[in-house]
Image 1: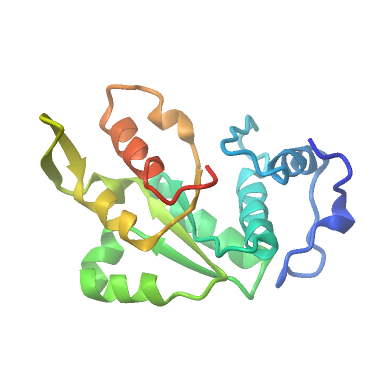
Image 2: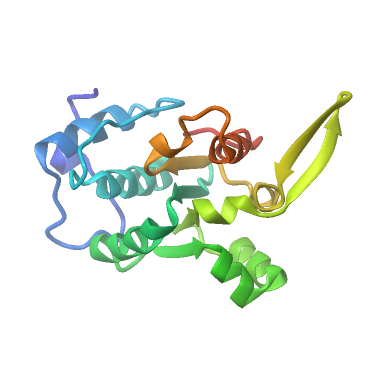
Length: 193
């Protein structure tokens, strides 16, 4: 952890007045601010992981010399929580929930337009259910593999920061969730995960 970081050194453009961390959240933030390639946070339910994640994304965007395009992978039932929590922290950041319902309602062309034209201060929250998509069977070097059409869809937008909520859901190496999450984490632009 970078213990030189304290509450006064957290500068998040557009954060609401009174925004503050609990001590355990500050410790997690101190680790994340060192920008590790991968990080796993072990924080109890109700411990404020969403706030830690949102803060890390916003600080990373604010401090980076290159554009950061973040996605949060979350169980379907938690997508709304991420959107609501962002509204509690800031009224100057945008959030786009990417769900199968959004794809059905907007259609692929309009969703592509929305995702492509979103401003830099946008956080994209992707429902794990969105990653199921339809299976595409391809051959790579003589090996046949199945990939998700919606994971391929996500790969078109240059996301370079991924945060996964409830990552334990992807622990089973033979599960479809694990395979789809691996496909998303393997996108070529990923710098932070």
